[in-house]
Length: 138
Image (cartoon, rainbow, N blue to C red; front, side):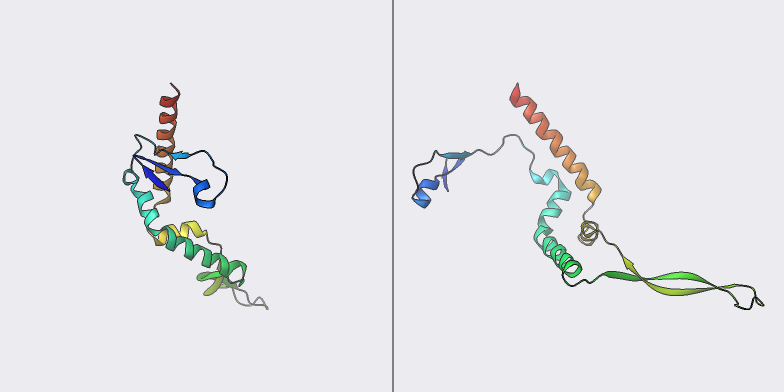
């Protein structure tokens, strides 16, 4: 890839020895907001690789190793006298209960990413892209 002025060009024919192909120009969009305008996306970008690795590991645990997540919870159990001579009592016990987890939510919580803000920023980006498209079609 060569840089010509403000445009990047790629000539695959020069790289691979194929028949000459037309020049491909990648022109960066004008008047776009830098990612810093979207702070939650900036945080997401900085942890993306690590988050992806952890997410794949959790999927591997579930799908390949058949390992599930569980936690201890308190549960009330009613004790009934089988002879009916004593009134029923309640006992609080600890029970180990399997948990269904949403990997995206767990990772967002771990990395302190607010998924609601991510959604708001995505909508703002889409609105901006729509405005730019409307302006370019006029």
